[in-house]
Image (cartoon, rainbow, N blue to C red; front, side, top):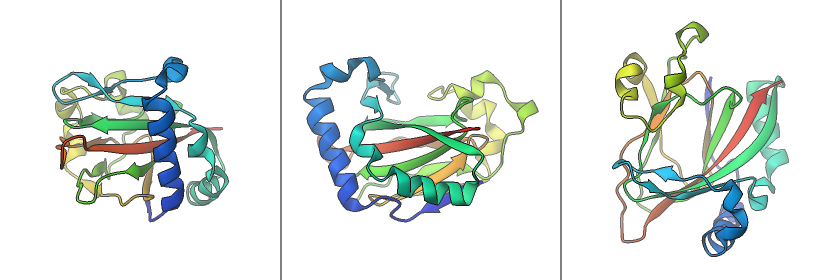
Length: 197
């Protein structure tokens, strides 16, 4: 199942998250170093920064849980949020999320005004007997061949700030090459994760 949400968080909350991330993580990231996870760009260079459970990402969590669990059911349990900043030249190769990330809501926290960097989600669900651990790696160029049949039927979502898309882990998803609009441009996304109870 796939669901798009217009303004699932307020623009003010998105702005608060942005400033929290930029202030605490970028300028003082040493205190978060154990949670830091690098992003990978299309040329294979490790760039970007991510962090688990940044407090400002959880200020509207009751509202988010209520909306998502109403649509997807009560058999999911919220586990954590994960913030990531994507720099210029980022790409997200086709993949499914690993087990335990059974339902994911991806919310745009920051993008410049004319940014078009869509999240593309296959409309086909991968059956359990088709699954291979290679499909859950992500950021692997070979995934275009491994997941070829899932790449032909898809929905494309472009986000305004505060918008989100949610899908179960069986849907392969990806993002194309991201080319910045201006020097220093970046894209910031928050992921909210649930597991099956």
